[in-house]
Image (tube, rainbow over all chains, first blue to last red; front, side, top):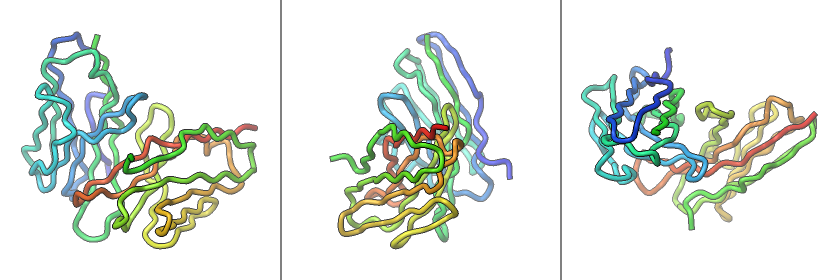
Length: 115
Length: 110
């Protein structure tokens, strides 16, 4: 199993630019989560999808953030325009909510730096 | 009150010693909990699940106290490789949605 795959691993961009983060969940998992982690705020849930449908986006900071899941094997998190305060590690995680729950599996994360 | 609270530490532990730390949760209806381990600049990885009163896996023991609404993690015979941040995870009111604690840092010293 390849695990949850995120790209890019690192992204450095200038303030005002558009940033797109990508995630491929584990095959067979029906739920996908986008998290952001900073030293100050820890792990924050931004949005999660179940069966490709957004269930809860209450953690999305503002309208500059948007997420899509066009199919079961791909999701994107877009920030436009980016700001320095968006600098963080963004993790994607997936799980299967059908049957016993065994926790989330995280991707390696995207380290975003906005200058 | 935060949904999941942890002592941030750090817990400085001599190699071979035992260390234990707790995590409190606010949702009294919670049924399943998890401990994750996160190494510096890495993703969180599942360490243990806690579904009933407790769970043991080698040197690691997780316990659940429903009356006082906390879970604990105990590490026996600490190894240098146990140095990490340990994240407590508890369910929220929303189905399928879990809340992560801020983490407890453990530093095992030679």
